Image (cartoon, rainbow, N blue to C red; front, side, top):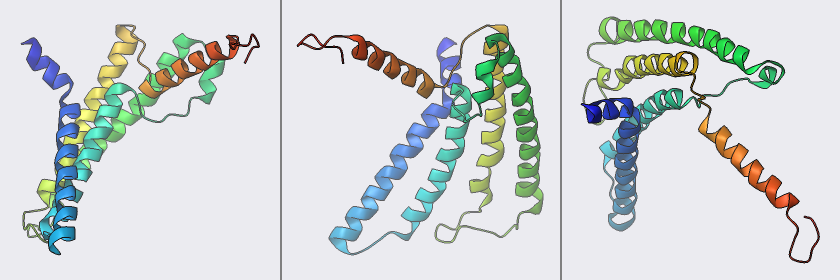
Length: 188
């Protein structure tokens, strides 16, 4: 059962990796075929575009899980860490409301307002298969925002943007390197 929850917890990562690998291979194949045989598959570009769109939306959900979405954080420098946690959670409530409303609009569009005969140009499948990523990804994103806030507020975990952590590590290394004397005895 633990493996099942591990897969569910990382589903966006697996989907993004798979989509990225497939559409990069398809585009590479397209380049090779065009270069060597002066021929192209019309469906490869269209499928790659759709896969890239799916990749972006699942990637946004994965970024929400990692706490890596862009935020304006300058004002937090002047606040105690405990207050920051609750202000971010309050801001995330607006994000959740937006996502829920967007899921509602996307489902309404796909199942009620979309042209029933609208299909992709070269592949011929109904475009609702492309647009269905919207309610799926925004639902996952909502779950991830709630999950991150639960971990921060209830469990007390310090979830920060992975890039911010990497930046702090680089600054620490540069700070250490700046204080270390060089081989000739001078400080850098």
